[in-house]
Image 1: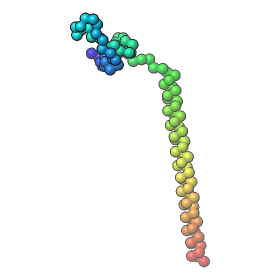
Image 2: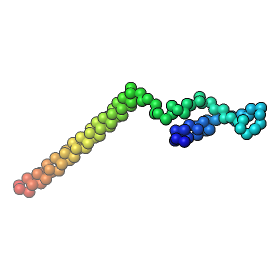
Image 3: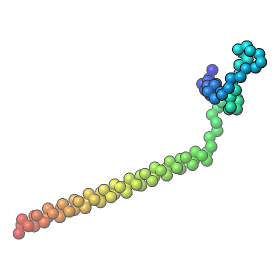
Image 4: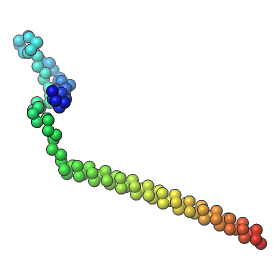
Amino acid sequence: WSSSRIICSQRAFIGAQHITQTPNTSLSSFRLMSTSPDVDESTTDSPPPLDKKLLASIYNQQRSVYNNTVSTLRKQYFAEIQQQRERENRLQALEEEKIKRAAL
């Protein structure tokens, strides 16, 4: 058995809602009644065709989210660097004032 056939048979068993019996009471007459349509096992071996428009849409959405995230991070980093530069400039100005006072 191929793995896809096993999966299909498992799905059919899991999706079965009723076990019916024909008027004949032998065990071979039990049937699983599934709400899902019958699956042709010969076509399940090949993967379904991929929708290129859907894949492109998913790719573009993921790319957009990535770009927005990177943009937000860059803005945060820029703000942090500006604050750090301002702090360093204030400290440097204080040091220069100390040196000038000490010289007078």
